[in-house]
Length: 472
Image (cartoon, rainbow, N blue to C red; front, top):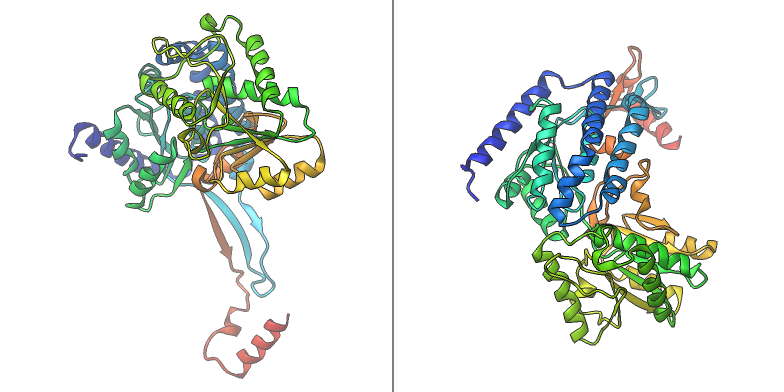
């Protein structure tokens, strides 16, 4: 990559301009922040149809209702929550002081970090651009957003709308290819948030390390679903199929594979097939099912299925359709008997392939999850408290939902983020405010205090005090 490319030079200049603007006004009032949030809310909601149309064109087909539910409704709720609570989040937090520091007072003061970099993926371009931006603005920051080149129409329109709404030294959107993306992650931001694949996450973190830029990585991995032995089975299957087919499985928290009690595999397939027929009747021409984003991603999914089948797995087509390269429509396929070493069972699927893995005991299911990299999400279907408590305590994931799929992301009061291979850090709600703030600890000493009692020269007096302090 050449650092003298015009787009990289322009990015350098933009970051300098935003940092200078931040230094001129390093602590915006709540009224100022609230006005920015309302402006973002207005431009997103006023242009939701145009953005949904652009997204539909970028994907090849993506239902407007799905876009409004999965992206714009969540953005609206996140902004509304920030407007309700942000003023309180800004306030200094009183902290206790230990007895030997009294009468000093302690507090934590949230401060804006400065300029935030946000790298946006293609799968939910509005939600995953606006979501981090909401947290950044609530915390009083400026931001530069890098959109995905795989959604060129949506990215271009988002850039235009943001430019019409915010001064460029406050919030700016940049668009470009992988060269610009690499340069973006190497910029000395005050914080960098990246949403995308684990592979690219490694590269982003390496680039950010050059300037010791703090990073929040929202990655993915293989999110498991466990159907408990005494779960409401049909409800579990229906709910999982709804979650897996949203955006045709192109969701970082989509259930990647399902652990079912041994002997229930065929029942899962049959119920899933019935559910698909109800959700997407006339599948081949159904307008509600999303296309795969690109030919490359379509070919990757086909390769995963073909390789698993060649290795002995059974593919269970859940519709009467077959994958169509021309329209990039890839119907949901359940897979049984996939070898553990197959790419299907090792790579994040990020599409409509759903391996079904039988287990004998809950111990086995928990061990299966725990011997693999920690996932971004874990889904459990169970009603008995013993199963729920064990899975909750004995597995680690970025987030967990019980008797539900995906919807923990829609709860704006919950932090969203990965752990280990699925990411680091979190945002949404208060945790998003904290991520993009310096929570500065401040100790204020009283005019009359005891500091001088423990100052040199050390001697009998200090020794006597130390004995007392160590005892109490």
